[in-house]
Amino acid sequence: MEAAIAVLTAALAALAGSHESAVSFRELAPLAAQPALLIAAVLLDLALGDPVYRLHPVRLMGGTLSLFERGLRRLGADGYGGGIALFVLLAIVWVGGLSALTVLLAAHVSVWIVWIWQLYLIYSLLALGDLVQHVLRVERAVERDDLAAAHAAIANLVGRDTDRMDGAACRRAAVESLSESLTDGFTSALFWYALLGLPGLVLFKIVSTMDSMVGYKTPRYLRFGWCGARLDDAMNYIPARLTWLAIAAIASVLPGCSARKALSVGLRQHAILPGPNAGWSEAATAGAIQRRLVGPIWLRGTMVTDLWIGDPADPPVSTHADVARAVALVTTTGCVAAILAAVLLLLV
Image (cartoon, rainbow, N blue to C red):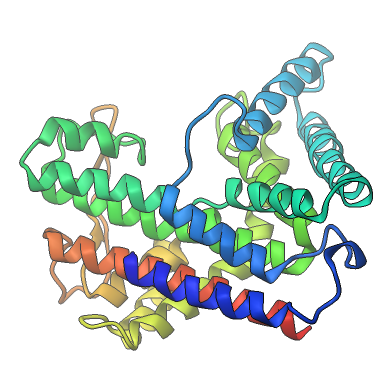
């Protein structure tokens, strides 16, 4: 991770230098994506992770969602229409509200306050550093043979039964979560920020929050959560496939990784995992690090799958070196994606 931060720091310095003769922030569209702010936010995310506090923007989004859900259900809007209304209300409050506040700040306060405000929002809505820190907590527990601590740490990443998991299974689950979440926790956020600026990033996080809170195929949420789940599928569709290609590209230069397997395993096995998008980055990571993932998974005392993803000739993830290679692959892919997004923003 230290190497990734060093590369991003160099990129930030270069981007800052390229802005010396550029127009001021006030002369730019205040909601447009800013390449230097993007790199600075990724640096903060990798260095600090995602601190837990009551007024965190994503927690506030979740609280707003719960409030609106209760109100809609009281009105009898607990079907497809209610789910669509939930999205519209969240978009008005969060996309509209944060956009209006940013424009007002740009018009009335110091440019530095506007930059700090945007940096805070971008940093708060990215999740790569926090994912890596969760994985490292699992790895440290396994390294010291503290299986109880490993179970507690992995429970923050996955919803399966942990009491049946040995150290190798904890490591596999950590790598699975990290690789799957590379798309919906980071590269999709980059994509929508680069494409639509701050409103695009906020919109994506609204949809992601809806999917995680109401996007379940249960009697309570099958219809009400349909809108959030389908929007999440749509907004992750292109980023998931770009992430597959990015993982393969990074695998071509990282020691112990295989670009060929990242491409082939990602293409052939992404559909093994549920949903149209999650499997692309997870299967690509399995191929890239030349290790198998998933294996037996138990939920509420019942084995729900014993499938594996990855080259059948490769061994399962089981060692510290396997986890370290996966972390290096995912963080490097995320950092390079951020740099490419910033460069593209400079060029367009």
